[in-house]
Image (cartoon, rainbow, N blue to C red):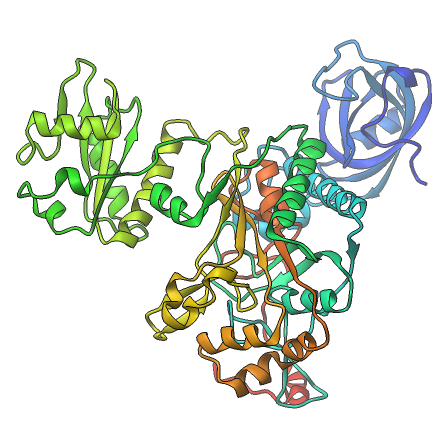
Amino acid sequence: MLRTHTCGELTISNLGQTVTLCGWVQKSRDLGGTTFIDVRDRYGLTQLVLNTDSDDALRGKSRELGREFVIKVTGKVIERTNKNAKMATGDIEIVVSDIEVLNGAKIPPFLIEDDTDGGEELRAKYRYLDLRRNPIRNNLIMRHKLAQEVRRYLDSLDFIEVETPVLIKSTPEGARDFVVPSRMNPGEFYALPQSPQTFKQLLMVSGFDRYFQIVKCFRDEDLRADRQPEFTQIDCEMSFITQEDILNTFEGMARHLFKNVKGIELGDFPRMQYADAMRLYGSDKPDIRFGMEFVELNDVVKGKGFGVFDNAKLIIGINAKGAADYTRKQLDELTEWLKRPQIGATGLIYMRHNADGTLKSSVDKFYNEDELTNWAATFNTEPGDLVLVLAGQTDKVRKQMSELRLEMGGRLGYRDKNVYAPLWVLDFPLLEWDEESQRYHAMHHPFTSPKPEDIPMLETDPGAVRANAYDMVVNGIEVGGGSIRIHDRALQSLMFKHLGFSPEEAQKQFGFLMDAFEFGAPPHGGIALGFDRLCSIFAGLDSIRDVIAFPKNNSGRDVMIDTPSTIAETQMNELKIRTTV
């Protein structure tokens, strides 16, 4: 090794030792008689010192060191006179006897500091420099620890890790596939897996009753802060189990991870029906760190001559406790926020419960004080509270109110990233109607089992059939979802029929799975947890990009290596492909 120690391990116990460190120059301070240099590696930072007793040639060499130079330095460990309690090595410094420049460095395009002056696009272009910063490096160290604890927990329960193929068959359900042309089979294509779904089911058929994999998945879909074209799942499947077994197993894993990585003890996860989540929060992934549940007002406010309410399918509101002092300017700004195309509300109605007990609303023309008293009773308001109301089509207004609830939760300080509120959401609809294609689609995927008691409704009322499905939600983020699977050919064929597949199409796309079901498939089910999302929650981040070593931007581009990009004409010819762009 070129070094005897790392830059993060020397302490007062090493006094008097001669050591050799290797790392990057963080910064240098020449104070005339004394020169201080901070040298850094991934383990920490150590202060070097040269003074008037040092060799002149050595001091001259030290003055030539720039930021990010890679150096090897030898010296004696001494006690610092001005100790730094914020540094692990803050009790000591190294009196330098030799410096070797292993590599020089250009001036970096942004500061390699915790608080950098580099914008997101610039840091993405020079990601290898961004990864030198403590916040990003610490995120990746935490990600590593999380992965190790996942493996430790699942191994203790007799799960085995099995790798599944990356070049698979394109199927029509879910997001768009990334496809890969086959040179040896001209005109034919592989797809990159959106998940290992069918393979893990085949592993259950094969008798591997407890499988997991920390696996790359690929989806060609529009991107946002918590999506990447390639992402990582903790993918799991179990045989001979019920839904309760899966919930207990992976609730236990979540508690294990929070305890062993974050040092936080989580209690039992509450459980909520999908229908209740939509009714009370307008979301299938409710943030339950705070209340502010929806209150329905149809029976309270209709029939008073106010057209907005009288013509609405649903009128709902929330009680923003303590927000009655919101000014008219703040309320107008909130209304404009709701009117943005991303949310699409037409307006906002409010009622203040003033500190003196009086009630004041934006619709006083239509509702007198006695009627507003009914509003206050319905919302159980107290002096100082602010009621916010939206009206419209049921699905739209629930979604709009969900966004408003989260916004107010943030503004009022209820969404503390150091507080964790997990839950299970259960009993999703099996199917959802798509207006564009005029047919049902699987809400999760076509291998999800319906509730046994709801199977007869597949013929009579498909939209009412509930799935044997469940999602794990933490702080309003869906971190994982799964289901009990279909494990017999007859029910799987029936499911494909209701999804609009002809028997021939179903056999062509999924015949390998249905054929496998005829050779003794056990009852099975599983879950896939979004590993990147889990890491971002543990790191207290809104975006998953900074828990991924080399992420893509919102256009799906890696600006560091400039990809996607065109390929050589000779490659195109070998693949028998032409572009029409």
